[in-house]
Image 1 (cartoon, one colour):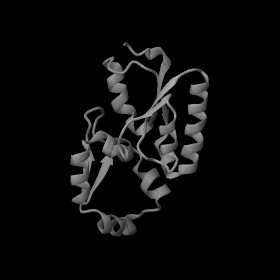
Image 2 (cartoon, rainbow, N blue to C red):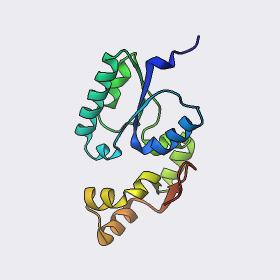
Image 3 (cartoon, rainbow, N blue to C red):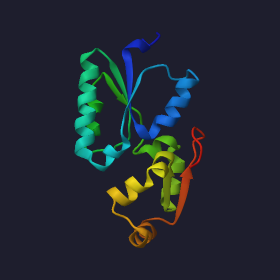
Length: 159
């Protein structure tokens, strides 16, 4: 049975935009995609509110939805109970990009993953939102991480 793609919309975190758009250009993804700003992750209640509003609008128009999100807020699991919504697997965006076994192995090694969008928006994320500066960033990162890996998915130029 062929799925009616005209009735499906994806809602994705903007962290996946470059990768999804490459797949759309290659006609590997042909459904519409609505992107929400990845900075909403810094504010889980805002993410929940914005996601709820978009989901409600799409469901009311008769769409079935694919959520391209990890467990980005404490409210993500509630969408699992709706038969018209499917969320892809993965606890976070890096885990969605990487095979689970590799992700877990690298996390155990203390890797901090840098993704393309984060690299482009580093000041906004690390300085403005997290309040990190040269002094406290070194301490913060060395407490939790042993190395940094830029996750190059091949969909955008390395900044």
